[in-house]
Length: 572
Image 1 (spheres, helix red, strand yellow):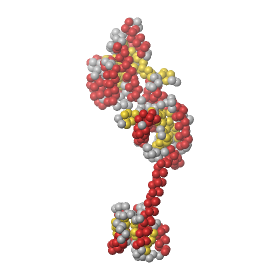
Image 2 (tube, rainbow, N blue to C red):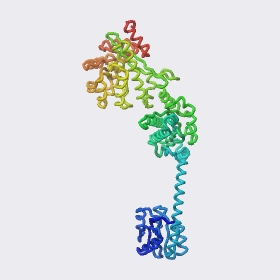
Image 3 (cartoon, helix red, strand yellow):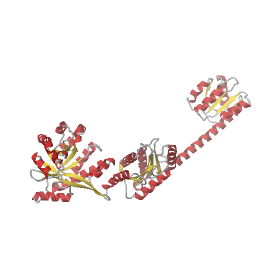
Image 4 (cartoon, rainbow, N blue to C red):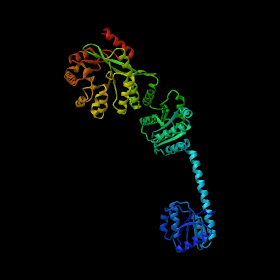
């Protein structure tokens, strides 16, 4: 049965003909909205006015309206039925029109047949559209994840295969990343599946930020996502993208005012070194993750088949660092700062040691660059600061009231305001007198001090002390040195290292010492290892020194022994 409010577009008819058709169609109580166009050029505009149900076109031997209407109908791409309602046409013209796409031809005056044709074509159109919708739904269910809208594994593999097939340069690199989320079952059991679904949706949204024509993302299983990224030029690029994923996913997810911290593993392999097909690449990285999942949470694992040995070592070092804090592999060592006038221990400089499970004890020079590369500068910095405060508080309670602990801090790699708040909260938590904590900043910091002065002043006003390291060779700004809350400066070891340069450096060091005294600061000489250096310090009247000549960096137990020996006078 024909629908009411039928919208018909008439092309090539006079107003009287259209009105006559409307009257005949109204006899069966059918409401019709129609528009008559005599100029084929207006057809295109009419198509965009509304959604027409049927286009009915006239035909005359001397008129080009039919051909023009067909051309525009094809160009616009509408699927509405096209019916010719005209006087007698030759069989040849009818067949030609049908081949071109016309749905039917009705001889003018046969209104009843026209109604039947309209009804038939509209039903056919509904069936066609329903079929297309069903096919589209089946396609989406087959190839797209319903929860996240991301491609499933099959479509992901098809797309990657298409990219690799078009890849003419066989030396072109690409990274395949498998991101495995752990702990979803616990969240589902405790908070409900809807919370677990929201967590997956937020994580997929975050990771989708990195997708483009060169970087594809897929949800290949309920708790696994896969990236294919060919927008990399070298192994370093592959590594940096893994860091981006780790950082993005490791940020807590907030759902219903609750913070959820995700535990994950990222497996990484390289095309074409570790496989020339996406199925092989995924298989390699999945097997590798399965073997190491329990030992390597919240880390990246790299498939090491033919990877360059140096690059592989760097990658493994970075990932081992991620586990160092959890596995208690990091240790703080303390080196005494000596008052040369009295021989007393004024304070301690802090040195970080990493007890690597395979390589043994490592000094900062061996692993510090990887702290920056892996984005762990803030996490390790917080760990060091907390343990320094706890240790300083313990020694303070044991009666070593004036012992100041100096910790070197980075000035890049984290939000300074956030770090300042962390320091304040930590001092409140540990109840450490703030004057017993000294934060050591590099001399280069003074060149950009205007960006941090307010933050430092806030801590300085609270009683925390500051020192500038490696002073004397970097051309630091004296103006900022006089403005910032700096309590001491540490000489660059280059000024006291070589006895042959003592004479020429004496004036420089003496001037720095005099400047420090005038500004109310102490000057500390670092890196003292010989009697010649110590003699030089006495000559220039330097009051404080630190170095292996007095003691190697030692753990807290041995440092306590040094304190006791200095107190009792049993240490030379």
